[in-house]
Length: 99
Image (cartoon, rainbow, N blue to C red):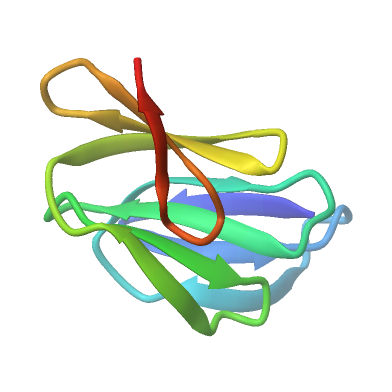
């Protein structure tokens, strides 16, 4: 599957490019899909980082402010912060380490 950010709206698309569903309707600045395509980590323009299922439902908030980017690292989530540091977190939201 493919994630597309268009004007702050996050869309989940099939490999053919057709729209499967809209995950978030506004304010998205970065997003990443995990390797087994079951979860999406996304960053909003207010610095909040959320974990969502591919159905679009919110699973949990990982960081409440100051996030600027997000990437999956295996089963863990690497969240880039405003100060240049990276927080490595489990899917449960617990902090593993700051790099």
